[in-house]
Image 1 (cartoon, rainbow, N blue to C red):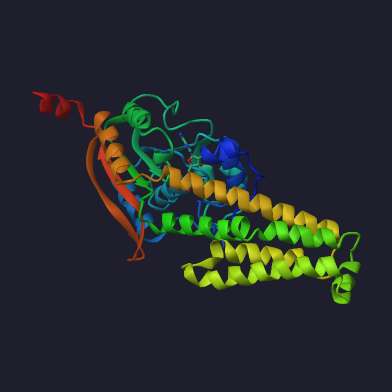
Image 2 (cartoon, helix red, strand yellow; image 1 turned 180 degrees about the vertical axis):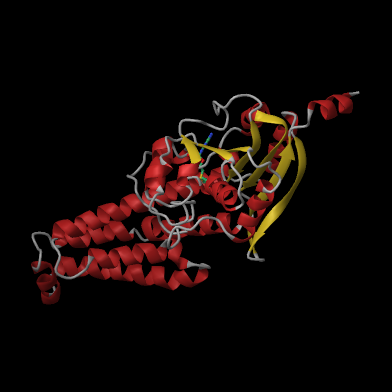
Length: 354
Ligand SMILES: C[S@@+](CC[C@H](N)C(=O)[O-])C[C@H]1O[C@@H](n2cnc3c(N)ncnc32)[C@H](O)[C@@H]1O
């Protein structure tokens, strides 16, 4: 996961809470189809896509699909592609608590563009109160989304909107997944750079010591301006310590790489001091947004007990849980829990009660 960064510094109180709707909007405006930002903004692939396609394969040609906590519509878009390329006419609803606009925000992504028009997106529609009609949905889906809401209220809502015999399929975060490991590592790297070594603060002091500068910046450095040189040495010592620690992370790119690259832009030759300050400000904002999102991801990730509770919520709402399994991507990377279930048909439900 790369650093998405698009949001300003936060109060301590907010840091403890969940990401709010406007923060999610800021993230989705970046144009990523999923929460993993990779080159070309592709959609989910491999075993994740196969899981979803197995769910779509259970549907009749005109089935109605509702993707909850859809973000920029990743799973809904997979449903649209599946439908269009197999001669089906699924009606696809994609809902999110935030006021999402994937038609605007994901239009630049090749993985989304051909299918966006086949999905009805609706924001301000939380998992717990979708606004969909009762008994109207054949398949409710959600990837990294159901666990972001209240599982008991969301399960009740899914039960309400499903047709009898309708199905639910989820991929949720898993406490031991690579996604969670990367989030933890990314946060640790940010803390090392920003809290322990205070790289951006130190960079700010160097820039200030050379203020008034523009091109004089480099000249004063070269002449060995005392204060500036002292601050620069401190900053360089911190950078060295950070670089020494990089090896203990499986991928130092999540934080260390991003921040050090940012620092080299701050000290790029032949730019104004004001530009250097602005680069530091942007870096701080990016880092704060990344940290907030990773903290939110970790907070949403169910522990083993919480995952059992989530299954209990589905059952408690009347959903027959068919099964669940750890979803492995590319044969090796644990990505989450896959869960499937259905709303029993009336006859089956009543005969089970006899
Ligand atoms: C990690 S993203 C996943 C988005 C998408 N399903 C995907 O896989 O790319 C989580 C999404 O859940 C949404 N969200 C958080 N709480 C929610 C709730 N209670 N109801 C509906 N959506 C919610 C956020 O706005 C965000 O778009």
